[in-house]
Amino acid sequence: MERAAALGRGAVEVADLHKRYGHHPALRGVSFRVEAGSVYGLLGPNGAGKTTTLRILATLVRPDTGTARVAGHDVTAQPLAVRARLGIVNGGMGLYERLTGRETLAFFGRFYGLEGGRLEEGIAWVDEVLGIGDALDRRVGEMSSGMIQKVIVARAILHKPPVLLLDEATRGLDVFARRALLDFVDDYRRQGKAIVYSTHVLPEAEEICDRVGFLYEGRLLFEGSLDEAKRRWNTASLERAFIRAAEEVRA
Image (cartoon, rainbow, N blue to C red; front, side):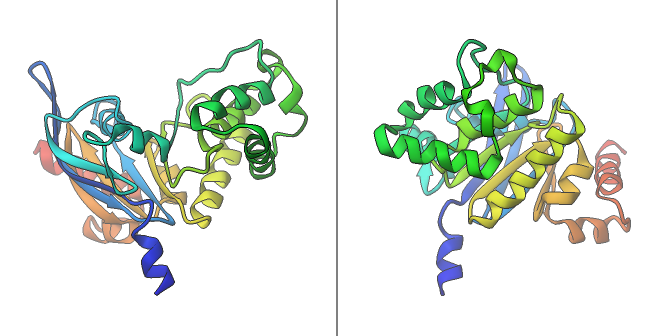
């Protein structure tokens, strides 16, 4: 009973999303659902529509048609409620180099209404979860790329959002920083959060995702578990399954 109730919280629901940029159709009827306590891999090459989908979920872009809900709130009708329940990390994010890690988190924490003891508790929590340590009091300009990424993730989850969007979040990371991020995703899922993991690196998705969607030229070619994808295309590799799905469309 408790597990069933938890699945209804923090879910992402996307139904028949369409989006065009001029004459270019970026999304053509995309639908999927992400349950609390799971990682959903939105997989596809550059230009497939992954970032557009996540920008719609983040209320940064309005869909032409279709609906999307985050933690029970409509992205078009209730954007402020959606933003309060989201964390967002992408591979192109940066930080103010003159601020320390602690100052960075305090600055962004106030956007989420965190002040005083609540802010201090939030910073202590992300430090424990991500292992930021002494970097909290070091200037961003003096940090390694991996530690900067940790602070970026900490900034996104400081308010413990029920939904986390990761868009090519491991781009540019070294092997140690990449491993730390993937381990964090697994831990955050175990805390009952819903995570949308957008990437074109399919081995990463194979490691951490519970369900996946194959997005290609704005269309969702497949939606289901990893085992279902492999069985459908008779392969032991998620990457090969995706390639075969795309080849069927191009044939």
